[in-house]
Length: 126
Image (tube, rainbow, N blue to C red; front, side, top):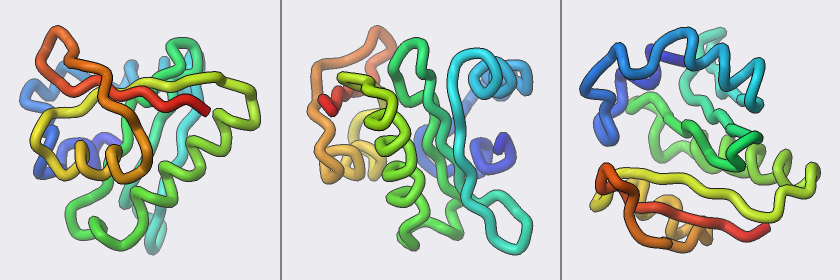
């Protein structure tokens, strides 16, 4: 997953040590759940839901796999899982002026202002 995270062209992780293997473990084992999209045994996209915070922690697709429905499939799986568990609303944030921002708007997420770091804060009521 981290290979995909580091390969993205937008919303780049400029400080690689900011997200470590331990962060993935914590999110996937202690706080939430994740999904991966694979091709030929290689991860080409992933999504991670922080169920405790009711927030999308990550949704990233390898650049060569963008515009092929991978992100939409991961997004759909994530929303289905949340709805099945009765989560009333979800949040996420992303950098402004990116394709990710447009993706979330197209998927029905509502902008709710900005985070302290300047990202767009989104909310979805399920």
